[in-house]
Image 1 (cartoon, one colour):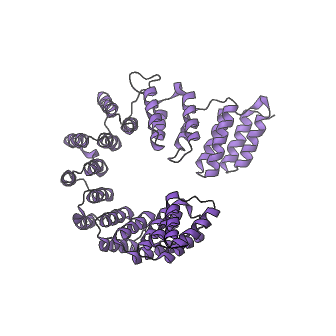
Image 2 (spheres, one colour):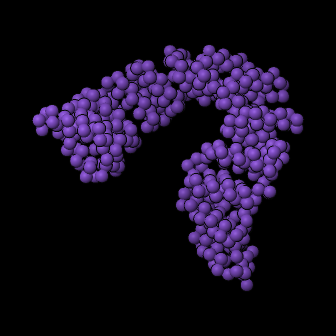
Image 3 (cartoon, one colour):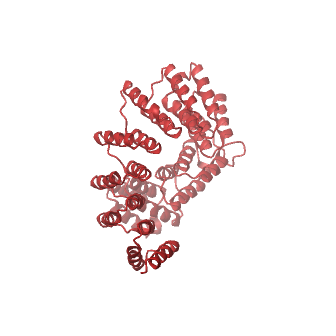
Length: 452
């Protein structure tokens, strides 16, 4: 006679061989008999295995099983809740996030140090500040409803990151002091979380002072690395203090901390933000001293900076270097160059960029095509604008959309092709795409002024 243990053993065997349909079928059979209803182990084995595959179809089925588990009034165990929290991604549906947190609430008196860190990390990952704040209030601090004792340096890192995320710098410093009271030696990850929490919330000087104190301490000096310095490099850059960026860069090298590619990319971004593109060439040269090769982010940042200053010749020179390298240009690079071409009135180059983009197999976005349409309209190449837009729409199988339709209508107006604009409007109206009323009125006035 089959009992719950026997069924669970069979389910475990099925999922071990990725036979999920058979496992789910067996679970359904269990639900038909009150004497051997699925229990926590049943759902844990099946849901955990489905999530482990990483496939969207299995993720969906796993969350369906979570709802069935609720119907069966089965209380989840901590490993199951942890698995579900780890499966949450920045683009996870709000219903999944809500359901996962409800499961945490259902076992809140069982929440320990490890599970709390998983909860907070999931909340930060999905970008829900209010959720993270509520969990911190529930599980940490003097007024916590279900206080959890924190004893590990890594766990303090997760808490500090969470406090920084919700902009509670005081909470982050409290964690830092709590670590000191417990005589815990921070890891480089914990140090990085603390420096980032302080710097990202506006106190870049405070973060820098913290780094300097860490470097003076024999026990923590070796833990300070380029990633930690990256927080203040970005912080000073965003505050328009490039002199401090260069000082911090020299300081880290003086302390024997080897810059990484991320270090150079952060400084490069600072040069773009603060109009110091003249120093980019020296930066690239210094990268080679450390045997570092520019990546897509490096090239993209340089292209952005040169386009912003109107130096399209340098921007295209960097673009050519990128094309010859290991990585291919992405949509961001193409859009940046196209924006630059639009400002500089470089219609030929813009047209060639779009063709290169499509030849690479990248589908241009509506934004990309709108920029190209404006660029060609300014050059009075209306036919080409329509041909490229409609050709891309056909090739990559997407509708023109309201934004691109508006751009084409405005192109007709700027080229005084009111007749064509009217025909195109009627066509899009037939396709149930709505045009801006002011544009339609402009076309009508244009037709009247030309006697049509």
